[in-house]
Image (tube, rainbow over all chains, first blue to last red; front, side, top):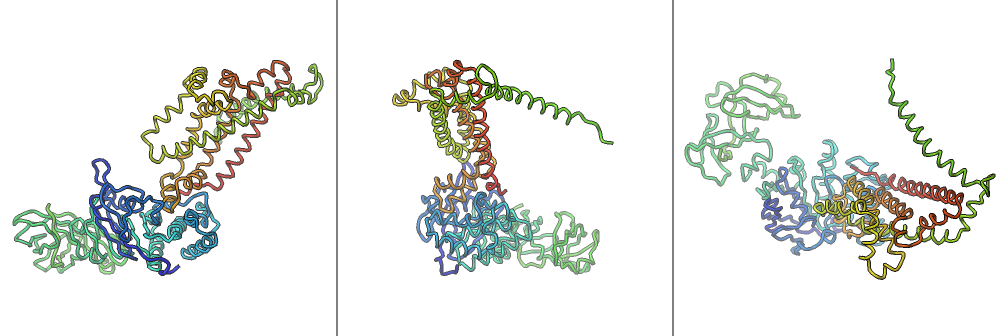
Length: 357
Length: 259
């Protein structure tokens, strides 16, 4: 199957809401996924990302708003007429059907000719490299294989939009990374418009063209992964995407604050703070650097924690009057540091984000 | 040294005793069913009497026909109902559960007379009214057999996967749900069939002749023949049970739950 097989679709959600009694699971979501684009919805549990996906799939009904595919309203279209391929967290393969029969299921439902169906099933098996498992039953496959079958089954029907509902959550770390790359490879190969829901920021950042961060049923920010990381629009995005230190500070003038005895510029927030106001500033670990103890402007603390992360090590520094502050240091350099050792560091970033304390 | 325990000797003794209690009457009945005329010698004479007795085939055929119809109607009614209750109608589940238990609570006489009056006229005059009674008396058992089976499968996600792939509700039920709950359906089928084919009270009260009512009348004419009838019924029931168990096992080998 190639990109030419199907024209990619545009998916639009306009002011989509879903209320469960008094609870607003989704609150006026506006989102556009361009043709061939992979957009991830990222957020903590209960933020509304899965509800959004289920509304697109037709498994949930929107309380308000419009769902459009290529400009055509889809709100009233039943799930089985939407042409959306969905991959579930729990695989959801039909246990009584073989791998081939599972992939064939959607084609049979569409009454496709048997010759075309057989050809399509073979193509899909090749796409996910499971030709040898065609006659196997789901319980005879590993988790990773099952999820590849689920992906093949969803793609077999040549869906307008591919919907991925935390498809990697049930897999172990190594398989997760492998399947993640496979999903991206196939998505790029087919050029299929894809909406991907996950709570794992690494997953979202690794394979998405754009990532939308959701909180309390609303989209906080949607942007390219790197832009989201470097220029978070809200404190929530800053703290949810990547590791961030939340450090108490005081506003000294408009757009300026004092934190850990250092002066910083406040940016990226629509909030206006008044002089003397107590705030929390959000600083990424890589925006802090170790300096010589003789540096008069530096903040001093004690090494309280070392967590090996591979090439980098996360170092926790205990500073008086502040929560544990985290830095990322090259694992090669960190060997010199001992727990309990005195250390000095500075904020290297020109601007930091602040929120009301 | 291994500690002496009374557990296994007790279990073995209880099992042997239970087998003995079950098998001795059966053995006795089988022995008697082969007694010749006047209780002497061994012969097939009682079974010959049985198969040549007036009303044997019509009553057996009627019972089988009504039991098959009752089992089919019960599944047609209960499978979609139970799927709906487990998927979307959770709030109605306790009400339906209560309604399904009523046939165990209401005395059979009240049920037979009361429900017959409520039945459409065209049914009141045919033996097919019994099908509806059989369905009613099987409800408490089929409800539980199907419900237990549905609880063991990831029903919601299987249905959602099927629907998102373009399948209609009918296709989803036939191709996905029914195979996934095959053991529950087989159990419900067997229970309805067994209850229907052995039902006596309602049939007798409504003056219809089925195999159980014919048996009672026939047994009064020939005591050894009556014993042959009970052995025949028992062997028939065992054969049926085995066939269904075999069918269910074959199905369940394919229907392994993936999670």
